[in-house]
Structure formats: structure tokens, C-alpha cells
Length: 320
Image (tube, rainbow, N blue to C red):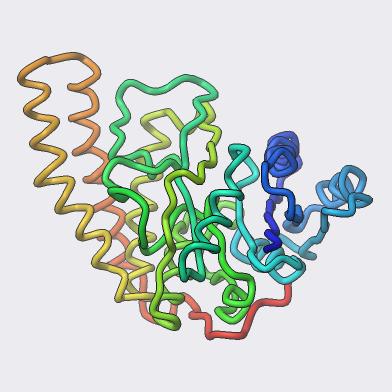
């Protein structure tokens, strides 16, 4: 089974991080791999990719003519890949050396069409004392309460997500109406495609927590201001998802119930029994971040209308 690993970027400022990601792909214990690099609308990045990787037999370099966003760039990567499976990793992430081996094991042992793994934090600037693990999803890290173990979930993070390539292309790739693009803050492009996959194929993503990718957590991602802003736009994105894939709304409701009726009481009990400054800060942040997710969702209710975002039909992958 050949696995193509896609890394996309649009910024020359992130090129050194992209190289770190690419080198982690080359360091894998699984040999039958292909590195797929896509420059999202940057001539400078594309030229550097060609210089560094263009002559490698196990690498493919592509581009989009303009900045189409992460969804369009990843769809382009899936189109030019040649593997049986296409896996995605962010340009600021590092795959552990057995990552692909663990994904391949799932494909070989289970009847799955998509597989993903756990995102672990790589604290570049240190771990913030006030950030509760229940909200690690704001920084692209697998959070407390995500899954109890190996098994099917709706989706994993797009930086640790793979599909059988034929399924990915039949789905039409990622929806370019969602996902990061320049200053656009709409998230959840992995939730959208995986919800469509469940609708079309009746299957979700098989989660293997042993397939680990580390996400670099830079200093700006640990500021309270950034996290609050991120929470707001995550709430807004959830409203967009309700319009595009209404059947997926149950997942966020399940998390909210578990947060309020399991995690909050546990944290309150721990704080009362053995109080500490860090516990108190995290308890307060639970409510602040939850509130701003709610504010973002309400803002979406007031401003987002049916038809504002395009849907993707099967077998209509973009040709960026």
C-alpha cells in the first residue's frame, strides 16, 4: 500500500516549518511513501519547493495559481498524488516516525476508508497554565473527551487525517467554502468532508491514538486573547457546519453535555479538595471559552444564511 503525504503552505515565513514536516515524513519507518508538496498561490514557495524536492524520486511538487486556501490546496494535493492512500499533515506539524505505519495497520486490519490519529502538543513557547485540556482543540491538539480509545469517530484533525485516495476524489475533495484562506477564520473543513463521507458511504474516520502527529504550539497560540478569538470563530464555524451538514450537529451537543455534566463537576471537586492557582485559572477559562464559542454561534445564527456557502457534490473535485 502506497501512502502519499500532503503538506501545503502559502507563506514563505512558514517554509522552515514545512521542511521540518517534510523531513518527518522522510524519517518514517514505513517505506512505501510519497511526499506531496503544494504551494498555495506563492511563486516564492513553489520555487523553493522545486529547488529542494523537485528532483526527489519520492516527491511531487504542485501549486495553485492563486491563494485558494487550505481546502483547495489539499484537494490539489490529492489530485496529483499517486498513492492508494492520501494523508494530510500541517506545515507546522511533526509526524512521529511510526505515524504512517500505524495508519497503514488500520487500513490493512480494518474495513475502513479513512483513518486518523492523535494530535499531541509540541510546546514551542511553554505550556500555558490557564488552558484546560478540554479546549486543546482550539490549538489543533486532541482534547480531553475526544474519544475513549481506538474506533470510529466523525473526524480527526486534518493534520492527522487520511483517506483512500479514490474515496477522497469521489467525494470531490475538501469544500473550498470552509477552511483557512488568508484572513478568513472559518474552520472545520475536515468536519465537513468527513460528514459528507458518512452520508455517502455510511462510514466515519477510524481513530488510532497510536498514530501521532505533534503540532507546534507557537507563542501567539497560547495567549488568552488569541484563544478567545479562536473560540468565537469556532462557534461561528459550527453554525456554518449546521447549514452544510446538519446531521453532524449532534457531535458538538454531545461534547457540550459532557463538558457541563462531567468535566466541570470533576474540576470543581478537584479545586475544592486540592486548590491551586492553575486549577482555578483553568476552571474560569472553561466558562470563558465556552461562552465565546456560544457568542460566535449566535453571531452565525444572525448573519449566516442558507446559500452563503457552497456544497460539494461527489466526483466534482476542484481543478485549482
